[in-house]
Length: 279
Image (cartoon, rainbow, N blue to C red; front, side, top):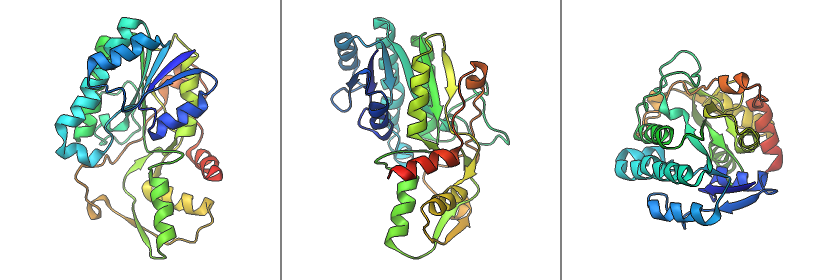
């Protein structure tokens, strides 16, 4: 299978390049500007991939609040350009999206059938706009929503926690009232490979690790697994304000995986243990 990856030098893109190394890969990054329709179309027309994994995105959540035009140009218009080109050249599209398309107010995990609106952030709104444009322009697509990603090379919350612990013995304050599914790019890349092998599957699929944690619980498990005696203090979101409001509930239910009888994602603790053993 020939696979073109946008954003191939990002954290997920790098993991995909390792996971799919036995395929014919076309790795694109800044040299293929998805905001310029002719550029991405020329790349897809030239390489004629069987599938495109669209990872390229503006993911700096707080910067999106002040750089709205850039966020929509990359996450919405750029995704539209990729979708149009995939449809034109008959390439299957797997586009990576986010939990931020939900507002985070639900008391339950979000399923693929729950209504998304773009949430409360420019990042979420721009990613949701990209989702809608993909749905409208490329019938042969999968929108793979994920959340709380960490992976080899970072940057990620795991790397941040380990760096903080290495620099000081002081207690680390970590938010304890936001709940989500910590997800390893290693686990995510393996499930993207599974989806590539099922051409009959289309639509939205949630791909996050099983079970949930708060950021505080996640940090505690990082230090436990690394056997680091680090004092961690739980705090509230209100005590740690950010320019972009964080969803209180980022949990994603994997209903589509179950409906298609595909293997479940691993428990987040097991995925974290595997990742930490590798670094």
